[in-house]
Amino acid sequence: MKIIHYSEAEPKHFDSDHVKGVTGRVVIGKSDGAENFCMRVFELSENGYTPKHTHEWEHEIVIHSGDGEVLSDGQWTPVGKGHIVFIPGNEDHQIRNAGKDPLVFACLIPSGAPEL
Image (cartoon, rainbow, N blue to C red; front, top):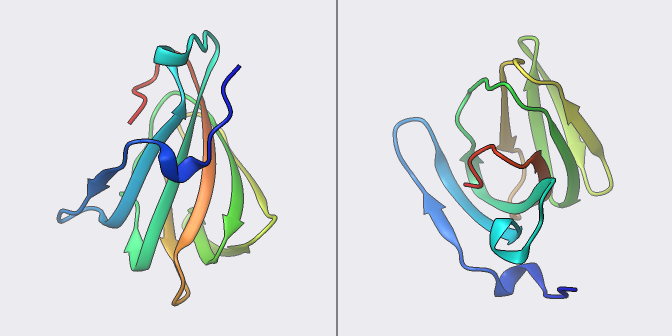
């Protein structure tokens, strides 16, 4: 069993032309013996956003705190604390922070997908 606060996991920071103000952490992954899923926690700073992208695997996301928007089918949908988001495989998507406080969310992906 593993019990940690997400902030204890090693952070990886992302900033480029396609991603801004994103910190990702693998909180449960292969190194923990997780054979079926990987859980990551992301923090998007004010005006931060993930890259617009597509991949084969699905995402299950829980918004922990903050205010954001999720791009799906060309439409931005507002999300906040307590919202659940399902993104099927092969669907173009992006997440951005729409508030002043960090947008924090947990994301599950299947094993075999890149953990970060």
